[in-house]
Length: 253
Image 1: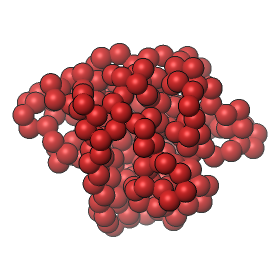
Image 2: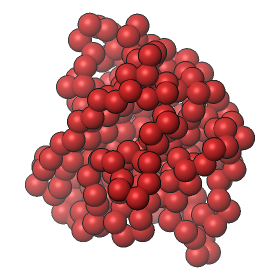
Image 3: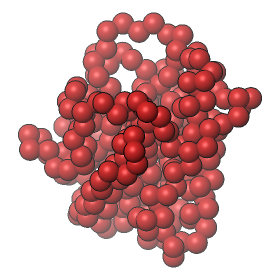
């Protein structure tokens, strides 16, 4: 994942609402959202490295990961960041005490949750913290970092929640569809060329070789009723959608 917006206890029927965009090379092989045949996981799957960017296990544990971008950093060999999500989902360790595998040395942000709540940490300086009520944003810097795309994501979620009766999967799928790049004077400096920085500055990224591959919506009620929708995209536009309604142990939000 490269952009996540989460609303905790901001809607009377859905205490957990999440919208996330996964940005990746179009050529990277990917399996659509679904039940894994070899593990009790509900997620999409990176068929190159075997992990995932976001998912649940069938007991209700949840995790999502984003890259931490620093073009100046020289990182030693690292396991895939997708291992972080699968490792947590297959673990019994409470989210508040979970220690990510040390083999993943590339920069990351990890959100994970269970009945205790949702927790965030990063191996680039983000201390472990429980997410409080409100709207939270995460991209390729630390939680709540003010980038143009995170500001737009927060405002879009706020507008969507303004009329609670209109909040549904369809409206949430539109929250992160803004493809407008930021102005040059608004760009963060992550150590990559400015043209590339601008390409990556929009909520929805479009280019011939790289872009937003999926938008995922998560809606969970207090009783554990959970809806997960994945809208898939390729270089030409929308190319598929998966929609699951499940009864899971609710996250402690």
